[in-house]
Amino acid sequence: MGDMISATHTIHISETLYQRLSRQARAGDKTVDEVAEQMLERVLPPSVGNVPERWRDDLEQMQAMDDETLWRIAQTDFPAELMEQYEDLLEANAKRDLLPSERLQLNMLRDEADLLMLRRGYASLLLHWRGYNIPNPYDVTSDE
Image (cartoon, rainbow, N blue to C red):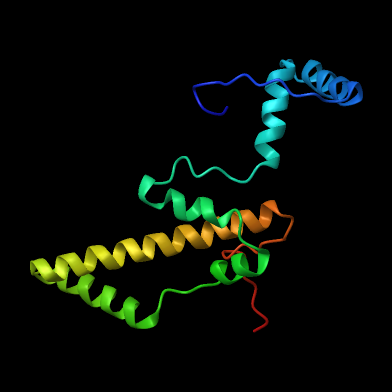
């Protein structure tokens, strides 16, 4: 659990809370430190440690955004004209070697799409962490 490197920090908690942690630790055959770390993992915003470094700052800044902004991000679609360009370049790439300018454009569009999906997903995670019920996009029911 957590990072390979550990840090030690003393915190002051009530005796009652410590006893609860201690009981939980004994019940799960764990140390109080392990239980406390697990609890902290659950209540802190989702980590961006596994995200490519070039996008981490962007996602970390989202932790300070208000709920309305996060909802807008979570519902953002890739612009239709960019999606069309992206699909055209993918199709061209399947048929022939792309020109250097086309390859550059394809890579830029792919990066934009990747960042959009990361931002959408992270916004949804943050909203869920804040207590909102986030619908599963694969759990769509139709009234038809």
